[in-house]
Length: 265
Image 1: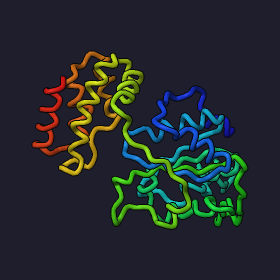
Image 2: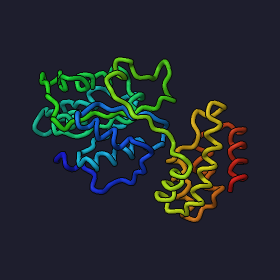
Image 3: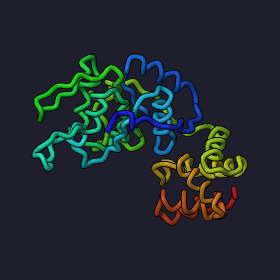
């Protein structure tokens, strides 16, 4: 296994929303730790995939969750036919060989797990492996990137201030209507006019944020709806499957969303 297997073979489609590409490239020149902030499904992961391809760097992605331990990131000893052998975790692989390590939805991980990245996000750029009694100096190409959804923060789930202040950050949101329709049309292979109708429906759902919905329909959900439509499902049924049912179980909210779909379809 080589680090090159983590290089993307094709450039993922990404439609810039502003100066985020230029800003990230500037930050990468100093291997600056970066935070991508924005709602679920707005394109944060696609952006970092595009940047890894653009920079020709390996990308190691970790989907964070509440049961993840520090050992899941740095590695552990495992038994095999020859005895006990150390196996690097994804973070350690990135540090050793110079990849971009992307910690997706880092707020889902426990705070006692995420502190392991602190020594990599200041001028030390080292990763202590306590179980191996080893300290790894980060490869010159290594960069750590995290994604963070501010809408999910709470007393129990939020980044420590000492973690936040170690990163520069780029804000992401949903694209403007024209750009979002263009993205959906490309990804779902549907007419741009039909994609624009899906965006109008999504905007109705986003207006309900804070009024029963934690978040409205994401760009990702609209792409799912578009793909269903491209397979012959009606727009009403596709929106029910991809938008309404996943985001709420409340009968009144479902009725409101269904009415919005009927008005636009």
